[in-house]
Image 1 (cartoon, one colour):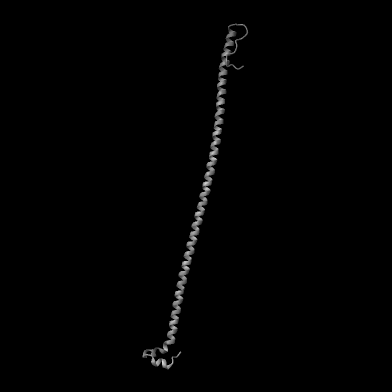
Image 2 (image 1 turned 45 degrees about the vertical axis):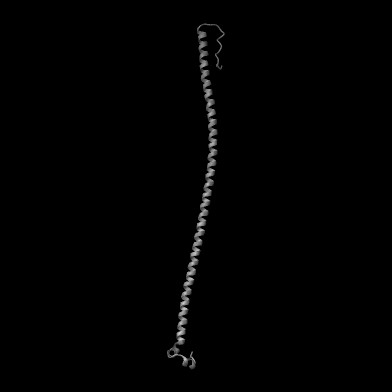
Length: 153
């Protein structure tokens, strides 16, 4: 690309020297600007990609934290439910045990009363036998003496 001779005539002397370098210099400047643009674009895209990656990682971390919290809440709820079931079962078993203890105590009391009655009957029987033996040894005639109170024939 050659400049018209009139343009160079009006220009200072040093411009005349640079005239043959305009085209290569322009190409060099365009090339440098292109390289700078590519490098700048690469850095911008790299920064954008890094920001997007960081955002994606933060989003993933937040989702994981939410899932962990949700899982912990579910575990805590299941644990509380199990504890309540165990408490309910324990209360039911305690009631059953108390009822069985009352029943056993009643049975023991009845057996104690029967044993006491047997001992009383045994003593009454021995006294009656002693009276009958005395009646016989004394040579008394029938009828035998009547049984004492509490004697069960």
